[in-house]
View 1 (cartoon, one colour):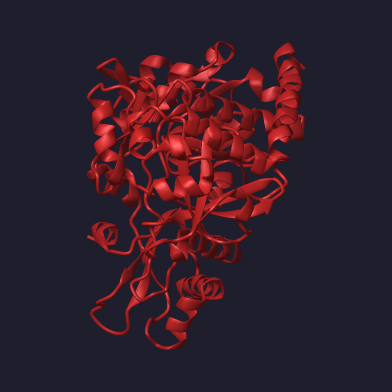
View 2: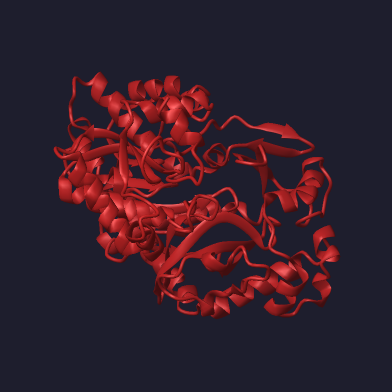
Length: 495
């Protein structure tokens, strides 16, 4: 055992104890965060406009500040982008993380000197919790890779602009610099396919122990590695690879394919990061869900998803939530986002401590007939179908077919198979039965002959990658929506 791995275990124990202190006092912890946020921003333009000096309780805050999305907050953000100070938060932000918006075009999310450290600490602490629970720290001596966006930043009015993953690359601790891959030069390559090929060339002969990234793009990296090594399993190429860290999408639909490509099972850690904040990470290999970070400069509110579009939906605080309910996540942060709807929905799997799973996007759903289908349901159905039929998939998405050429409307599951099921009808039936068990509205529509059962459409090899490339969204942090209430993606895939 190396000195570095011994030190990692000692540090991991320290961080675990620190986490327990706030996790065991969740309501008190969130109240402290709330009061600090209000006090800090009282003299900002936003604070003055919303009378922060009169706010003493969460009820006051909810009365004075409406829930907003990016478009609603944009007039304030535009002032900050132009270099104005003390608008949403004190002074200027250090960075703007540029993200792709579906309706807003490019979005610019502020990162401040107060918020930035939490992004770094959360990623570190996720690994340390794994070390503390499992005792496995040998991987710290191997090479580590994170498939991410370019670290090249631009600057305007004293604020730097870039992708979040590229910004974070500037904060890699010195003790990891020698272990981290790819090289800075390779990381700066903008074209994703060229970049992946360069990463393969750099890493294929290295002792990779940790690999991290969005599963769909790590899968592309693995495929290129296998092409370069005459079909070897990833576990043969990297004999000490034993930890996969991921976020952005549910890993379960990819798990069978990954284990087949690797040739063995490896431990995994799920993260819930976003430009707006680092919200949660998997703190245990034994428990379901990710630990919600209540002490990271973010005050959380939760609105039931099925009430969200009502005129005045009730916003709950951490002490009022329940297990298994689908909530829209609302955040207020030390980067100056106030009662901000990030678009993600979560469900709690535990209240002691508070753990969540990401159940989908409030704008990514299917309800063409009032069925209210969410991402978590389709992912569970796919997981069940894959387990029962022993097939392997690369990617999938779901869309409604409202006007079929014949017969009743249906939900179309567009799937890129690695190994197809022997009987497609049984496979589709398994998916449909799972959906009916999970969603009573969908079941009623099938029973009432409003919808017919699931229809599976095969997508050609690399079809999803080709679609993302056509949209200029190949690689990085971009990902295919798991489901849509329209046919924009579906029609492109079936052309």
